[in-house]
Length: 142
Image 1 (cartoon, helix red, strand yellow):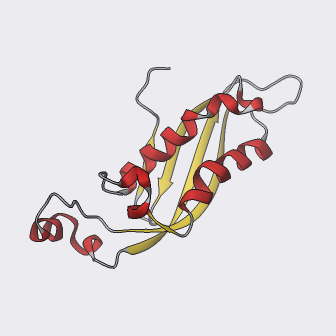
Image 2: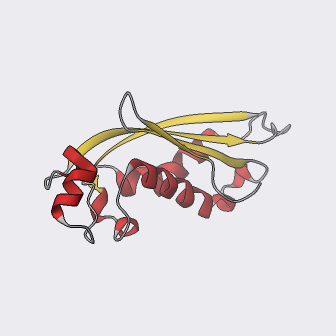
């Protein structure tokens, strides 16, 4: 069984690599290199896969999953500047990097989810705009 839950948060970022000259940053990142940054309303999908628990009839308890995603992703990132997040000190906060970071943060504490002991984090999908979305399934073998 696959279960996908959708969330949203707003955050800003500036695509800029300090090690590169200003002109190269402008050329590489275009309008996304604006010194004032710019914001997005991100839509996040978290997909969980596993068997249906015969006792509960669920793959994972949605309330528990919601609280977990809220604490590990929404609270830290909502209404923040991604450039000021410690994870993005040396890493450009592109949506690709943000998607991988969200997956890593969720995977890191996954075994603490009571109802997810038989389920695994399958995928994180992050929509930046109506035209751009990014998906990450992790790099470790399952």
